[in-house]
Every structure is written in structure tokens, then in C-alpha cells.
Image 1: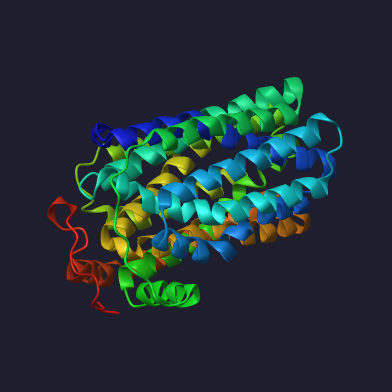
Image 2 (image 1 turned 90 degrees about the vertical axis):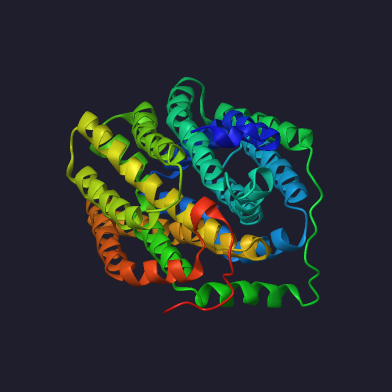
Length: 420
């Protein structure tokens, strides 16, 4: 389960993230509650989610091209510094009592722009730390760190917001970036040769899109991921409404509910880390997507706080299995020269579609209510899972043609176009 930690650079990166990521979740919860407190509007909660993530959709293709042309290590150092500065700026505004809703929207948008560069570089950097043989395990361990943070971060945020206010949460997040920055600076990396790119950055991006369009397994995984992110993931944006108006839990209840989802996701990530091979993950993807949608429907009809929390555990589990399995399959099929650009499209589907869904969910929730909105999103996820499952035999044949997840996870020729 921990075999990727035998690599010194990955060990540094893993433990740096383990210390830093709780701060990210603390800020997310505190920022959501701050917007809710300032505006008392579900629609503006959705707009805040849109503002923080939609820049990823716009900028990730450029970020992926940059990650394929330049040092991913230096790019990550730059994005961590920028993220820390933005968190500390929001902390200063909030602690001074000067914060307004537009401040939060502006800084959230800037952080989303930074993430448009950070996410593709972070995904593509992992193989440089562990090599291809341990890549599936490293992806699962990264997911474990993310969800361990998701388990403790919201709970800390709920207590801290109730006791001291949102500003201290933002300050804590800003300071936490020192851990991952220290890890990045302490790495000893072997210089890697990058292909010489003579074309424009736009042509470089188009090449990545053309590659994805021509490969059925990659294209199908990304389409399913985009639909799940669009329809299902915005449930988190509406969580303050559930925690306060529907379940009566307040900010501490919000932290508990998000931690329940994080706990289930952590178990899912650890299960994937324990697997010895990526074989068979393609069959897990549609079942996990269906389970995620079913969990959302169950959560939407619950009016008991503790039942709602219990339902979020398998919901978080299914969400993580679907997302991390898709990530692993994509990375095992993609050549390194295209990794940044393909993972930028993964970032667009994973993080970039969610804000569009958040905006729609916030607007719908003001009209038909948060429960009906989440139920509709869950139903859409189940239908998307059925679509993917029906295409799975064709996808499996194309994966075998690519050979991208062969014995030992070795890289093979993925340049030719498989069955459509």
C-alpha cells in the first residue's frame, strides 16, 4: 500500500501535501460559510463556487501545455507561492473586518487561475517522482492525502469558524503552504530532457485535444468525469444550505458533513492504494459513478442530520473510486510527452465543469430547493454511469489495442487510433 514512498522525492511531496492540504479544505469550508453569512443566498453560494473553479476550465489547457514545455517542478513552486499570497490576502481582509463579498469572489477567481496551472503540472509531475511502475500507487496515495485532509480539514474549519471566525482559517491555510514549498525545494531531481517544440503554444494545445479526440478510452473517461463533475459535485456548494436550513447543524454541522464525505473518500483511496495492478479498474468506474449518484439521491431526501452524515460516507467512497480510477487509467495510457496536456483536460473535466454545475445548482436551488437540485444531479450521474457501462466492451477492446495498462504498467505505443 505504501510502496511509492520508497522514492525519496515522492515521500517529501506526499508528507508536504499531508501537512498543507488540510489548510486548503479549511479555507474552502470557511470561504463557503463566509459567503453564506455575508449574502444569505444559495445562488451566490453557487456563484462563489463558479468563481473559484471556472478559471481552471479556461486556463488548464494553457497550463497543460506549459507543463509539457517547461519544468513542472519550478511551475509548482510558483503556483504554491501564489496560492499562499492569495490566502494571506483574504485573511488580512477578513481579520481587519473589511471583507466584502466581491473581495471573496475576486480572490477566489485568482486562485482558480493559479490552479489552472497547478493541477496539470501536479498530475504530470507524479510520474517524474516515482516512475511508471509505482505510478498507480502514487496516484492512490496522493488521493489518500487529499481525502485525509478532507476528513480533518472541514471539522477543524467548523470549530474554528464558530470559535474565532473565518479569517483565522484563511491565515492557517496561507501558513500551511510552507510545508509543500519546503518539500519541493528539498527534492533532488534528475534532469529530464524535454522535446523541442517549434510550434506555437496554441498548436501545442490543439495537438493534445486531437490526441484525446482520437482515442476512445481516454475520450469516454473524460466525458463521464465531466458529466459527474457537472451534475454531481455541486452538492458540496449547497452543503451550507443543508447544514443550516434543512438539518440544523450550523457551521460545526457543515464541517461534520463534509468530513463524513471525506472519510468515505479516504477509504476509497486506500482501497485503490492496496491494489497491485490497474487491471480491472475500467469496470469499477461505472459502478462507482452509479453509487455516487445513488448516494446523492439518498442524501437529498434525508431530514436526519446523522443519517445524512452516514449517507455521505458511501457517497464519498464512490466518488473517490470513480475519480481516482479514471486518473490512474488515463495516466497509464498517456505518453509522457502529452501527459501535461491530457491531464489538463482531466483538470478541466474534474475541476472545470464543477463550477458550471455550481452556478446552475445555486440558481436551481433558489427556485426548486436544494434537495430537489441534489436529487436531480444524482439521477443524472446514474444515467451517465449507465451510458458508460453500455460502452464498456468497446472501451475495453480499445484499451487492449492501446496496451496502455499491460503487465507491469509498461508504456506502449499509443499513437495509433483505436476503435471508435
